[in-house]
Image (cartoon, rainbow, N blue to C red; front, side):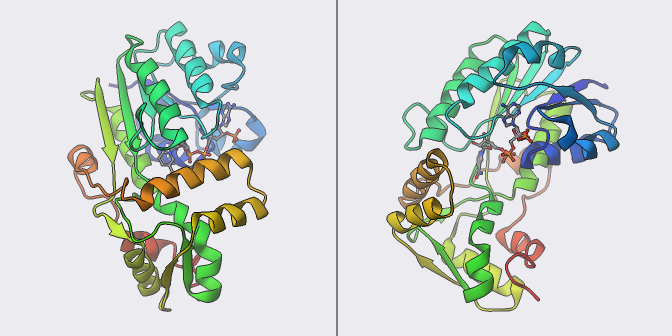
Length: 289
Ligand SMILES: NC(=O)c1ccc[n+]([C@@H]2O[C@H](COP(=O)([O-])OP(=O)(O)OC[C@H]3O[C@@H](n4cnc5c(N)ncnc54)[C@H](OP(=O)(O)O)[C@@H]3O)[C@@H](O)[C@H]2O)c1
């Protein structure tokens, strides 16, 4: 049955991938954007733009009007619970029948990272809202590895503060595909899905996969957290994001992310992309000539 789906975060990584998946479907898509001049591509793909800001709740009422289902994604930041709460209130006021929420791996009140604890607040608010919901909790995006692309391309070395831990990291394109499925079909109400890639791998295995894809040897060199913190600060990254990233590095170094689930395969019907597939698709960014 055709439905009207409102997509928040529409110009970002995950939500733009959802729109790509659904733009030629029977469903009517509404995209929440702050700045329509940044969303010309969405308009030309036939998506109806709704202008609103998650930090300005008075802009959201009209934006959510007419939606049956809402995808709520907030950017990582200290105001994420406020943004999610504003979106949920707008969804409730507009009579939205189901909310699908982008959370994160391990989101819990006792999780070791601030981002996970903030996501847990919004997950709890949605679960307690009485609105039918689905929550998607993805692992670390493989695309985050692009932060090491310059040193891999220039020196053949991937410097990260992840010790010798294992992680079930996932390609962000798979998260978009998964979310598009869950948004557009019935049967996911009340479900909480943890999305991982097909294997829990060490950074040495990741480096080897990138080396195979680029045709040049790549090695992983673990660095202290302090060094990573310093290089992010020097690169001009804001303090909140640096601290959040260091929280994750510290947690993952103790194998907090050493897990694999079958949630993606059970819903979508095929395996998520492996690190080798990711490395092949992004080989150019990692220095393949
Ligand atoms: N990176 C990871 O490994 C990882 C893993 C698991 C979960 N997550 C979660 O994934 C989420 C981020 O997803 P993403 O990478 O797709 O995000 P993203 O690419 O940073 O996109 C964020 C989107 O939010 C929009 N936005 C920002 N502030 C807004 C506001 N005040 N009102 C309305 N829209 C606003 C941005 O629009 P503009 O174009 O206007 O800026 C953009 O479309 C976070 O919740 C994070 O915790 C990340």
